[in-house]
Length: 90
Image (tube, rainbow, N blue to C red; front, side, top):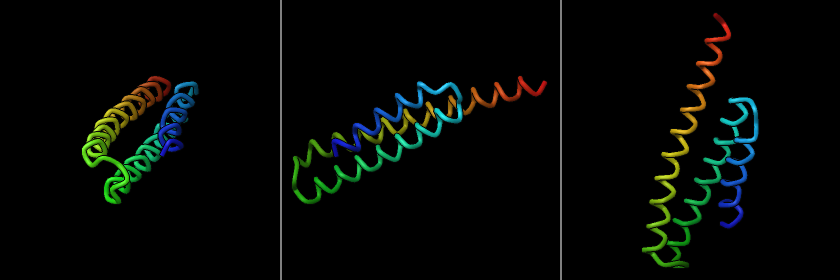
């Protein structure tokens, strides 16, 4: 679980360091995959009673909220890319 959580952060940071929108978007998608992996690990820990049910539920909800935020950021990047591409054509 630590690895997947760390992967979320490093992918977002690496994507932010890229100078092309599409690369940033791709790293954010990878971060989203790691986020889903983290959520799955939390569900498994909850279901196997390896961690507090309430704490797992709280963290699963946090994962869902963060996924929404990450999806909005990806949409923002796509919109910026499209705007840049459209301005380059004219």
